[in-house]
Length: 94
Image (cartoon, rainbow, N blue to C red; front, side):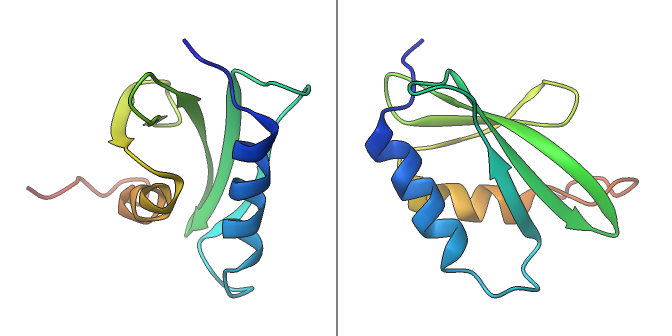
């Protein structure tokens, strides 16, 4: 599985910093120069964190239990994936 490049990390930070302060995506974290996982933090009634991994075709977001949830071709699509994760105790529709 590919790791995140420094450019990927810069783009994640740019996307996050471009959001309003009250947005549900509350932060992110990564360790190392080329991390294999970036943690996305989100709150909407409940605090949650989601592992983001780089794939051959883009990015894969898992739920807080590590189950694959959604794939995104671009980091811009990532924002929509983070927003689509249901609140705790709410079942996804569709």
